[in-house]
Amino acid sequence: MTRESILNAVILALLVLVPAWAVLADEPFTITLATRAVILALAAVGLNIALGLGGLVSLGHAVFFGLGGYAMGILAYHVQAYEPMFEWPFLFEGSKSMPAIWLTAILVSALAALVLGLLSLRTSGVYFIMITLAFGQMFYFFSISWSAYGGEDGLSIYVRNGFPGLNTLDPIQFYGLCLAILVIALVLASRLRLSRFGLALNAARQSPKRAEAVGLQPFRLRLTAFVLSGAITGLAGALFADLNRFVSPAMFSWQMSGEIMILVILGGVGRLYGPVAGAIVYVLLEHVLGGLSEFWHIYLGLLLLAVVLFVRGGIVGALSGRRAAHG
Amino acid sequence: MSLVLIAEQVLNGLQFGIMLFLMAAGLTLIFGVMGLINLAHGSLYMVGAFCAAAVAGATGSFLLALVAALAGAALAGAIVEMVVIRRLYERDHLDQVLATFALILIFSEGTRWIFGSFPLYLDVPSYLSGPVTLPGGIAYPVYRLALIVAGLLVALGLYLLISRTRIGIQIRAGENDREMIAALGVDIGRLYTIVFALGAALAGLAGALVGAIQSVQVGMGEPVLILAFVVIVIGGIGSIRGALIGALLVGLTNTLGGIFLPELMKLFMEPSAATSIGASLASMAIYILMAAVLILRPTGLFGARA
Image (cartoon, rainbow over all chains, first blue to last red; front, side):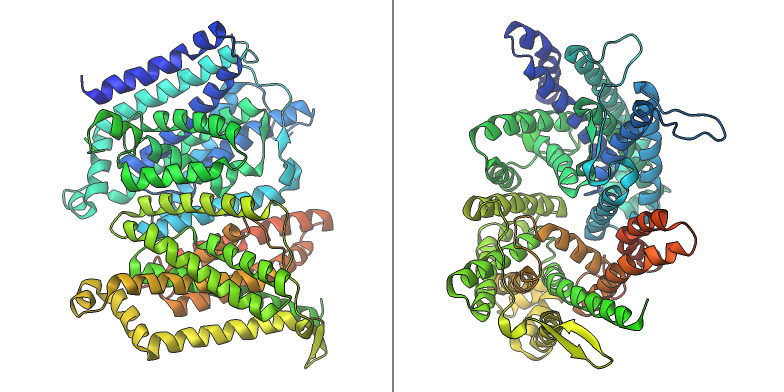
């Protein structure tokens, strides 16, 4: 076992033990914090597929996060308001069921990733960063001006959506559900990087010309990675909205994109558990520094700057002692 | 819809576009010469606006306020370049994005710490307030007209600086081959600091000029920054001429789209739906423009390299 895999096991064990600790120490709020960290980690696991494996610096992943959020918001809103979503070709009243919402979130964000990917993957490097950022803003302004679903105020969903066989209003059960999804996503991501597709994508990231010379198609590989990445981040958006029981254009904002990217880089780009470590540390920092000072973003900024300038490879890189992010 | 209204909106679009140009010119220059993507450019815009508002509040002089905006933003830019940015030139874009994102957090919260969360106001000086009647009977605010003229003068000055002066030659040489000009004895570190400070000063000037129309507040820079990105993606990264054309296109599309798209929609549907759909479409118009340009020319209108 390498140090990195020991570290990964420790991180996972910590997440599994959070509810037990919260009950024993009588700190129920910890579970909400941990749920937040797990959901953000899921969003970042999504981005890490594009960023770490594909080398695609997307500053627009809030698009998918927000689409997932609004998929939940819109479906649940119609049930809540007793306004059918559409009556033709069949009566559809919306949905308060998590599996249906998740499926919608995944499909919608995958479709958006396909369209945005087709447009923005024509470019590379700094153009790609700016274009994804700009498309993110487009969705942000669209959600603000679309008054049918709350516009700038967003949508409040009063009761958390249901999952068959579980009481999702119980924080521990909802946390367990989110953690299970995160673990599934991590298994998927680890399988992906060792699969033929993952290896080809890695090759296309390192040297597009050589990849092309051996008969791979970098554009297709990147597009597939972008779609997968968007779908996972979209699912995280749906969960995030369910955690807060609220969606607003802020989920589409470019700060959100930046935040998801911070999680990945803080944890370690291209590391399997990088996003998870990044999300845990980020949520802890937010909680601790936010309690100390109203201006905690200054400290976050300074810390981030220090990580970028001096700790290359992020938290997982620093703790596992291996510099190379791509093994 | 009268001709006067259309002319007025075209002028508004021009004014907006020219201000975007001041932002985009600095960004594109910094990218062209140093290969750096600078998300904190919007913070320098904000720094300029706050310097101007503070000096105008203390002295009451608008000209002094503009000088303060230029000097303050250039100084902030030079310091940031020497302390942080300098370490990023050899890094990949991802590190640059993250480090400059961190700078935004520091600048924004720092400004909130010093000036508080309430917006400041910068008044238009008395000799530039009120409307002027243009040929054709259009009453238009003098200040906005002055912005267009000032922006065009700056654009001309920038053109002369880059095409006619020694420093301009060095900047152009730096864009082409930085190793070579370093070998020829140009102090490349100093050149980078100067270019960064110049870009910062332009952003600060834009912040101060626009600050007199809008309020001066924390976070004012980021929306403009993203529009400036759209501008240089359209114009082609590294090209000042592209930035000017792109800025005017974006300014006009944004302003005219907001007015005409709802009207256009009214031809097809009932007024209330037309207004809301038109407004949604208008907010997306510049991004659709960007997508269209990208499909036709992936490196922008005047861009040479990706």
